Image 1 (cartoon, rainbow, N blue to C red):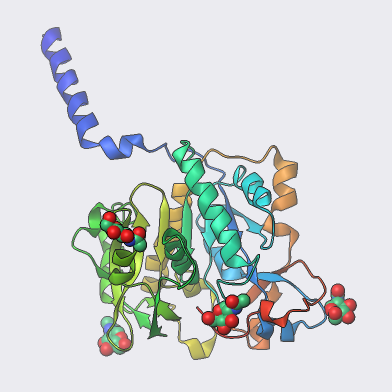
Image 2 (cartoon, rainbow, N blue to C red):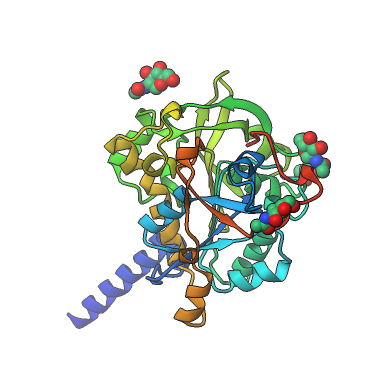
Length: 343
Ligand SMILES: *[C@@H]1O[C@H](CO)[C@@H](O)[C@H](O)[C@H]1NC(C)=O
Ligand SMILES: *[C@@H]1O[C@H](CO)[C@@H](O)[C@H](O)[C@H]1NC(C)=O
Ligand SMILES: *[C@@H]1O[C@H](CO)[C@@H](O)[C@H](O)[C@H]1NC(C)=O
Ligand SMILES: *[C@@H]1O[C@H](CO)[C@@H](O)[C@H](O)[C@H]1NC(C)=O
């Protein structure tokens, strides 16, 4: 009898290991105090016109901060225009980084894209060294991830398109075996695939040909598509096969936190429930990272709580509230402030 039990246990554990091979390689999601960095971006001329005296150099829409906080993480703002060491030192203490959407050029020196490149390269080094380090890119941040993965900035590996509307996701046939959607409940998948609950606001898209042209299909796995105004099928969600890097072309953070009437963002319970999934998923990925600040005092020095968001919705901005950073003299080169709505 004991021998049979032992044999049974052996078989059970063998099957368990075989069946769960990929999952077992992941570190456990046991960091219950995750801290996520959110990358800022160049102050726009529009926002500068609202706060002309302050000369802020960068901003983060508060919707991204709140979406991350709602998923159970604290936020540290990451500034643009710093040396690589600044990003490396910060990332040693953070559990993941969010590249938000917005409207800025990728070619401005020491801007959003340069900071993004430092972060992307350092994150790859960390992951290769066995330190789990997730990145999530939203809209412009998703495009940035793919352009960085393409290894060059000019010409940018994305196409013109037009999508300023709420759309459903058209999932790929094997999306259920992806990291982003394998644990998602059926009711959330049903909403995402049948209701107009993903907010699109972009004039560039990443299409299959962009991945193929730069040999990205081995590393990057598409999990859903949507169609632009002219029927162009663009990639709506993607993930890296080896690294915990994720991107979505739409804006999950807007559903609960952006209220500009003319934008017609969906705010139904189904829209809120289904869009929560993306930061819930990402923050849980960040729980696998065991990086920490040295102590609470150090956490406090970097935390977003040191800044006060401004009520910009009342001034007409598409963002209800925004954090601004680093007031300094207006740069002489006006070109370094983006002034068009480029996503
Ligand atoms: C950056 O790109 C924009 C749009 O393609 C272009 O108008 C601008 O001249 C570029 N700036 C630099 C510094 O290359
Ligand atoms: C989604 O929006 C499209 C138009 O953009 C409309 O034709 C379709 O009926 C909508 N679907 C639902 C389920 O509301
Ligand atoms: C993609 O791979 C092919 C075949 O290996 C190679 O010829 C081509 O130069 C690669 N393209 C890029 C952009 O790396
Ligand atoms: C903002 O820039 C203007 C023009 O360079 C300057 O006069 C003003 O003092 C600056 N304000 C701050 C708060 O630095």
